[in-house]
Length: 321
Image (tube, rainbow, N blue to C red; front, side, top):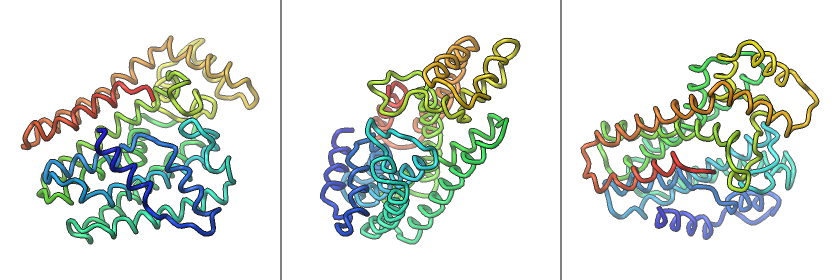
C-alpha cells in the first residue's frame, strides 16, 4: 500500500485548496493532515491498476473521494458532538461548529473540482455515480440520526444504515477505479459489490474497536458509542439477547442522564462480555469480509493483480485503529 498512500499524500499536500479567507481553508488543511488510512483513494488506485498499470492517471478522482470522505467527517463530528478525531481535536472543537459546517461545504465542492481534473473514462457516468453515492451516504447519516430517537433498531435496519453511510463509498471507490481503467460493466459491478462487503466488515470492526481498542492506538474516544447510547451492532445484539439481571443493568445505564463516563463504559462492556457480544460481532464482521474475498477470488483477473487487494483486506481484519 505504501506507494499508493505516498502518491495520495503528495497530491493532497501540493493541491491548492484555497488561501483566503484563512478561516475557511485552514480547517480543510488541518483535517487532511491528521492522517487517516486513505482507504478510499487507495482502493480506487488499486482497482485502476488491475486494468492499467499507470495508476497515477486516476489520482485526482481518488483524492476527490478522500476530500469528500473528510467532508462527511467534519459534519458527522458536529452531529455526534465528538471531541477527538485521529487523536486530535475535531474541527468544531478547534474552531467552532459554523466554521466546520462551511469548510465542509467547500470540501464537497472541491471534491467535484478534483473529479473534473480527470481525463479518464466517461465523465458523465463517473459524476452520476459519484452523486448517487454521495446521496446515499447522506441517507445513511440521516438513518443514523433517526436511530437516536428510537428505542429499538433491528439488526437489518442497522446493517442497511451502515451500508449506506460507510459501505457504498468503499464500493464506489472500487467501481471508480474500474470505470476509469476501462473495465466492462459486469466487472465494475462485481468490484462494487466487493467494496460493499468490505465496507460492512470495516464498519463492524469500527464498532468493535470503539469498545475494545487500545486507547493509544485508536485515535478516538474509547467507548464514545457507549457513552452516547449509539445504536451500534454491539448494543443492538445486547438488547436483543439480554435477560434477567443483564437486561436490568443494561437498561439502567441506557436511562442514566448523569454518570461517570468511565464507569458506564466499563459496566456496559462487562455486560457485553457476559453475553458474548464481542464474539458475535466478530462473526458478523468476518462473514462480510469472507464474502468480499470470495467475490474478489471469483473475478476473472490475474491473481497477481488481485493480490494487493487481498492483502489489504487481511490488514483491515486485523487492524487496531
